[in-house]
Image (tube, rainbow, N blue to C red; front, side, top):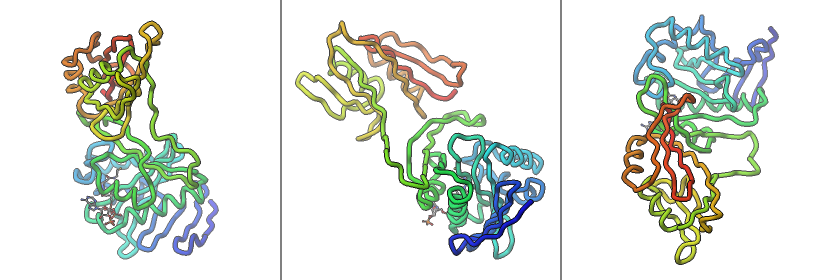
Length: 314
Ligand SMILES: CC(C)(COP(=O)(O)OP(=O)(O)OC[C@H]1O[C@@H](n2cnc3c(N)ncnc32)[C@H](O)[C@@H]1OP(=O)(O)O)[C@@H](O)C(=O)NCCC(=O)NCCS
């Protein structure tokens, strides 16, 4: 194993561990040690066994040191993973873990700290070093962090280390009954030349006003604009805010309307939405079905034959 010591940006020192592609890093108050499940599990189990810390994690609190060792070993061997144990320089105490998840399309930042270490900027300090490492030494052009929309501390860390919101998605962890909304934060090593903020299907309908009214009743949507009187076109936002996912309705002759299929992902409120569609006067409502691809879905049709599929993780 070859070891090279470098001075990095004047404040972080690193020694390259070629075999593991994870470097020993130092920040002003922390040492980032390449995570070794055999050496570090004992200390890290305090973190992974604490229900308050694990509230937002992908699995429930880990029940034993052995379980924590297994989880860490598994995480660490996924392709592209680079995980560090965080040790305070002042007293050499292990306070948590930070790094990059493996086996994902875009390198995914991860961080977790012992409860008593929260609120001192340690996560921000560790994440800054991990991102610098990812861009400078691992050659990554972008990193992401997927954070549950209620995890305010983690969201604050994302913003402080220069990640910005790129989109949202719905997930359900195996140990939870209900799905939750995730915010996907991202940062690129160089500014992106193009930024697409929405994909908006354009749907041809015979009666723009009637379809807009139906969608508002069925999906708690709102009309953001209309053109013409009666309307030739309308912008529909699928939610209560001034912007968000939506469709544009355009008037066409009933004989030339080509039916399309639109998929909607919802987080909370799937059952309520189904009731709302039933009560909206929409026709051909297909009841919820657990699909083999891990989704629970129902569908309904607009008068022109367009099929709207509403989906949530099952
Ligand atoms: C997320 C986590 C690593 C953050 O650790 P931390 O050391 O508190 O983070 P930092 O101190 O670097 O930054 C936290 C920021 O959140 C802010 N914050 C603190 N309490 C907060 C609260 N209740 N609500 C919102 N923001 C809060 C802090 O003010 C700080 O920002 P500031 O420095 O500008 O004041 C830690 O809370 C944790 O381990 N959580 C459980 C595991 C987890 O959820 N991991 C992330 C999964 S995506």
